[in-house]
Image 1 (cartoon, rainbow, N blue to C red):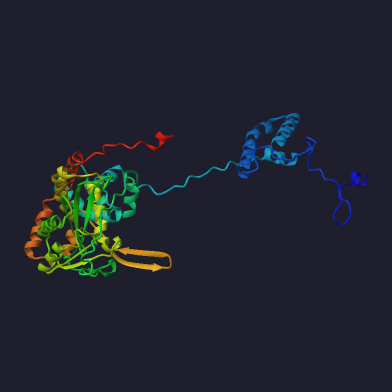
Image 2: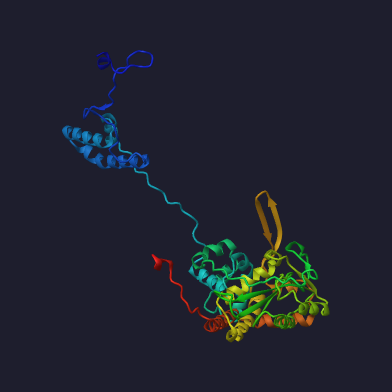
Length: 435
């Protein structure tokens, strides 16, 4: 009886009077906000303010009785007391407009982006860090071949000074996804491992052209069974000069014959040869040839691809990007050789490369710094070791290169190669077909 009259009992033994936080207009206690859910207070507050601004004109011109009705409705919807409702309807809050953030206007228009996209396509979609330093030389080549007749001089000048970050933003919509990876067919050669010295990725300190890495790329497609073609990749460590040749198989005699062809086309003399531990390289045929030519023959450790990091990178950046992962057999050898022949000048004269100059590890963070991108041709000239006849021959080859025409010829050769590739006879069903 006492609790019914005086309320609930407190911890100290006294009694607390009952409290009723009620809306005087309706006579009941507001337990829940009727304007919306309880998870987004900002939205509820904005809705109440919108309602106050909508009812304010009616409230100002309404009679005393109509104002009372409006106050009752507004209090019932929002849960506000009548005194607070009077203040809001008499002086509604101003609408807060969301100001859009004004950024800097784009510095480059559609004409600049279109010209940049053409340069990017002509260089086979290289990254912005390699493309930006090469843009002035590339645009000058295109201008000399009259490929920019309809482009103004101002547009050419602006594109020539684009930064790598600007190039990335301009080409964001044109970049494709990452391609798939292929199969490996390297088998270890155990007979001559003790006779060939090991050279790891940390041992390359040569700054002179002539020390090369070689590797084979298998064009086996979806299976390594049966005969298929190979590509012999040769990369100069100091300059990044690349030469490739197609092979019918990977017998020691075939590999040596392809290596001789590549050596005759190089503008420098081979001083050192480094390969993996595959049996196609670790054999008496190649070992005797290196001894006769006074070539230092070294190999990488088994199953350590990073020991041949220079040639492994070109296997993807040159061979796989130009040839792909399709299966090629003997009828496609001539088409494969044609692609490699066109790609030799395309890669060495029109594809700038960067070299790692510093690698700093601070805890788990690794910082790599690279030099300015240059083509292998420019790096070879910068060594100052070429004879006048060799330098003059390379300059003539460089002057005769039309980037757009060479790119179109490579694409035509790629279509011919794709037409001669072997198509899989069994089409595997999709996973959804089993559902």
